[in-house]
Length: 164
Image 1 (spheres, rainbow, N blue to C red):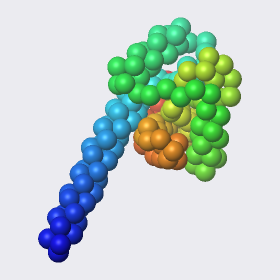
Image 2: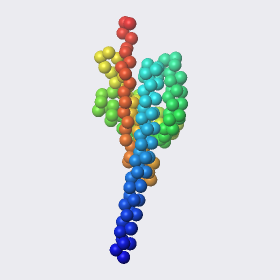
Image 3: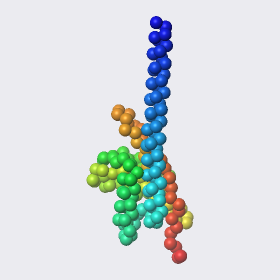
């Protein structure tokens, strides 16, 4: 009887470590997607010299938005449906770090399918730069909504054309 209890303990220990290993694997996949999304957004914003919501009169604004959407689809980044809490999270980050939220705004959720990232514009003495926050999500029933971790990055300073 003593050996039966010992075998059950070892099986439980093996299952526990297996679950931990699977969680780490899925966590690394989700982090990779969020990190890739953040980097692609930063590259696109730097390529076009800003975010279209900041200046809609640019000729290439629709090209930039299409490129951003294509990059998000290629990365396999998840969409959210009518997540007003995301707007609040982005506003909290912007007020804490001193910036203006460009995406998402409340009206961005009119089509009910949007991606879970924030774009925040910040100013410096020589120009402006953008902070991009992509969220790492876990699709775990019951606790999945509570497990959102931000992955943050910033563009280089985009110099204002002041008499140049």
